[in-house]
Length: 240
Image 1 (cartoon, rainbow, N blue to C red):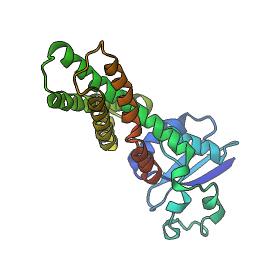
Image 2 (image 1 turned 60 degrees about the vertical axis):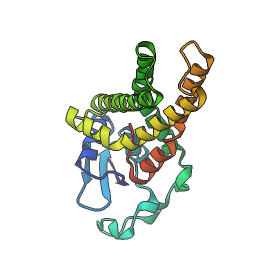
Image 3 (image 1 turned 120 degrees about the vertical axis):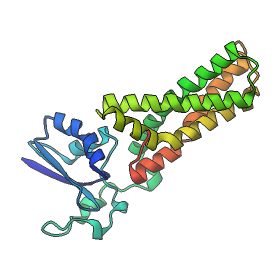
Image 4 (image 1 turned 30 degrees about the vertical axis):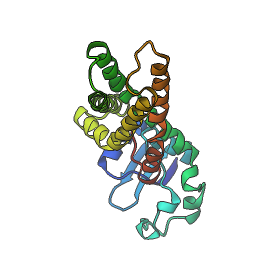
């Protein structure tokens, strides 16, 4: 039986709960545990034929990862029969902004946020233009932003409940706390770009309206992406 021990980006009991469904469902993992008593949270997993890549893949399913070597302080490492083997920490190092897997994960997280924001944002814009065409641009942008934030939090909550198996209260709190800044940046980018293209006066039948729609989606995706990457890379906090 192989035993893998890794420093992880886990921080608390909530993090451990988020990885539990994946590790419990794995056929390769027979036993696993996380030591939360140390500054660096060590995960130990045992099983027949299990490898480090298997453990990392399970962590990444829940939005976590092996701790980056540059974030590890030697004084924080647990002393279990001697210091942790330095080569294990120094392997696969990449510059902070060049981590392709993290960019992919951040992009996926950002798309989830974009979908949630778009549902409420453009839904409100369509509703106001169809039934209250005299609404001022300021009011329209404010209502669209608020609605977009609400639908994004709602979608994030459902994703955490279904995919990560959180309870509803924890899912709502987590969705609100981890993605709120990202969503605000996204909403501002979407509404500002829409206003710059249309001036807030384009109708559904206008070419400029649909051009603005596409520009707003692109801007809404790109604006918060670096922030989401930074949070995921540095602190392992993400908008799922």
